[in-house]
Image (cartoon, rainbow, N blue to C red; front, side):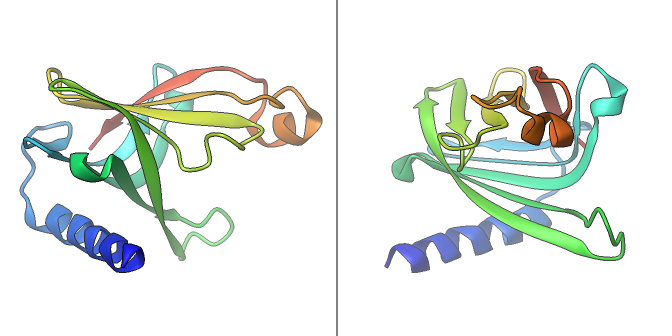
Length: 156
């Protein structure tokens, strides 16, 4: 039953993102009473070298206390391949103006921990990537560089 419900949510997330027109020049963003959807094409930080080109759709469903993030990006080694990833993220806070969710692997990720903040008032989706418990080890610094917190804003 749970698998079927998740499949249905994922399918409707991907379909609704394709059907809805952009509601904002920077981000497609819709906030209903108990459901929120947002779509963008890149994460932008204050430092341009940290911009991440990735297609994203978020759908948060209050009765399930869950956000679904669907993303697609070009494979790092073969740019002709597109990788698609779907992540189920538990909601840690939901009120009339803001939703906060933790990445699916937040509790056990050793190198970095990602949190998401969706804000109704300023129509933004933020990704806060902060160092994990082992971020200063060579295994992590070899991949992610020096440990630091980066805040990204979802954009078109």
